[in-house]
Length: 317
Ligand SMILES: [Zn+2]
Ligand SMILES: [Zn+2]
Image (cartoon, rainbow, N blue to C red; front, side, top):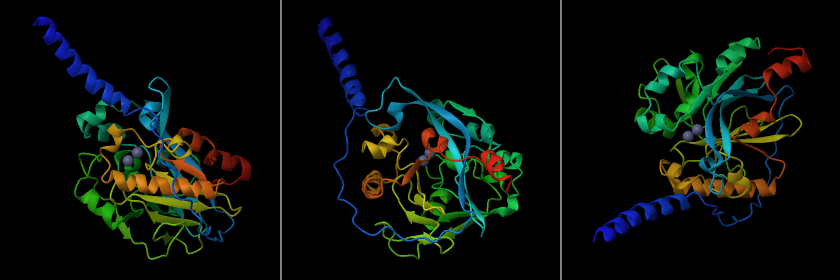
């Protein structure tokens, strides 16, 4: 009888554990339908550029980022923003960590804090200041979505409009998941819509300056108002800032979703998968497209930084 009890306890422990570990194993998504539509034209002005602002890291393992990743391979996930310089006004995609992050961290749910091992390097506002950047050049902040690690720095940019979709504005208002416990005060949200037509197979789009250089498309799933931002430079280099659609590049290159435990908090996991499959088909059509997942350090390491720009051009803005 005693042995039976031990046996049942062992099964009751090991079976769920095995099932849980299985959710980290490789499981590539089926090949998506190829994207055969046009590559949109763009006439980006001279002087447009993207600059990495990595504000710190979250110490994780590869398995946390994509199915099939090793549980033993340490990876630092970037917490970052990207400055897009444009002659008509610069746009900051995500902020990464802000100056107040240590206090903000205390307002996060215990469960989230328990799995967050971060190193705070330098907030975006301080990096810009150190590079001699004039905040007046900043037209707006454009978060890919409103989770804590993308908007922590909003209070560091008082008066700068924060562009959000109505769905994401509502998500913020309702205090949706993975936001700080204490809402920001004094942040100036401005809603935008998708008045433009199809873009790379996405149903609608928002072309910020009308020149095709910064185009936002709706990609709901991770949060209700998540977006992807496509940036095209003057030399025709194209970027896709995909936010948390995937956390690591393998999400696209190996067609691997984030592991189950992290997808559970997506507002619409099915929507995330659909948008991921579509991004994969776009990448196959346009292999030169540079995909930037918000938390993949390798993508940011390839992008210039403002200090490099200072060295190369002798300019600081
Ligand atoms: Zn997120
Ligand atoms: Zn994130």
